[in-house]
Image (cartoon, rainbow, N blue to C red; front, side, top):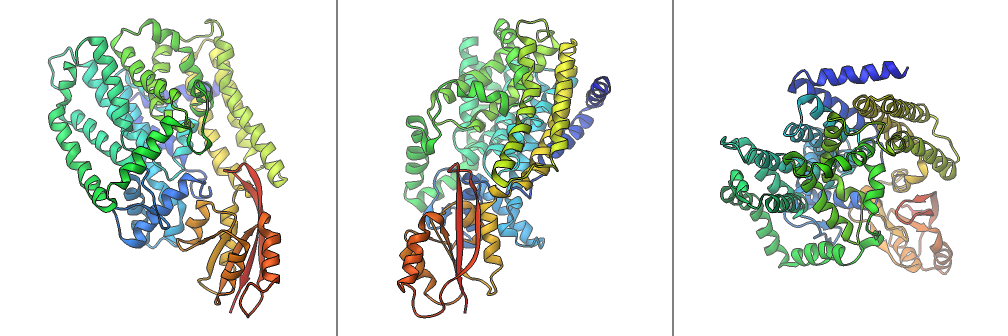
Length: 566
């Protein structure tokens, strides 16, 4: 069995090595296999995803493509790029007749899907600056099979698009660095790719792409004792191009907000993360070194084994660039108190390239001290995920995820075969088989197991209670439960209430109305309605109940719905 899987993986490597067209086609197929299952069935994931989606929806509702709003609140945390992309896709979906396009979260996720697929293809292009076609294809496949990119492809946020921009910029920067001794002029397409990636990255997430490229360029210039190699990128022309692309919106938002955008985006969001850990996302330095083994599975274990090789050859041009791509930005992220796993995602393609380079040169093999133990992380992650999902499903919903269990076990078994190939002295085969395990794990988790976790789908089930009312277009309010996913699914006019008296009064205003009351407010709400806080008319009637688990709070949650109908 192991030999057959290994031969299949190597045949796929051979097929990808035939031509660039074959490599790109296979990478797109791999990406779609990893990213599409569960793409539409996954609920809006609080809190960031529905905040982005709701702000994009409000752009369509108001026609204002400059200001960014979540309900009545200015959302001046990120530039406008992702909102434009999401709004354009949803508008196209409406034009094509997609039912309920504005509350179809999968439409808002399409830019992220495109960014994730582009990351894989651009990872291949970047790897070609360091490796021959076969190894470049393998490095890009490892990026496509990674857990974190698979997750970000399904979330309507900035990170998949940001990663694509970063990889494009770093692939172009690598060609400028590696070709600095030659007389050939850097192709116009490469120069244009770099500056377009910088401009797009600024519009998507502000200074992050310039940060990655700038820190790498600075370190390499210190190493070379000259920054003259950067002239190949034609910085004068490039900076003018970037300004032409990004300045119009920044000028418009400055005029619109009176400078408030910069106070929020720079002063609160960016500097707040540097100075303090925002939204309870504090973690100590070194956190990324630990979580990367799960988030960049299955490549991270091999990348860790490649570190001694990279350090020993740190003065080689290619290895120096990969270190400069990763190390300075990584240190910045480790130093910042606020830590989220996806922050280091744009650095991961360099780790994949480094791992494959070390394997190709024979520096990663079973006889290295501790190598077999580190390689055990490859089967450990899917095995741990299988156990964790079964335990979570049983504790939350009292079920076993039978639909996804066979594929979860298959992904684990194939990961064991990858470890076995490594132990047998076939590290390249082990990498290729690990990619096959990744191609099974994504569909198993997101496509088959996730739909069974009903306890996590609190907001969609609350929205279903609204849809079941006998009167159209009810006014809806919520007391206690204030997740952005509920705003996205119910509508911009969802009323956020602060007290039981407000809830009782809301129901008493006439017409068709619905209020969700979290359990901690239930006694006060019952007292308010019993005391006649509602106006004369029909008493509110129970319209359903939803219990589940709030991911953000990390606690069980229960809500009862009460309605009045004409």
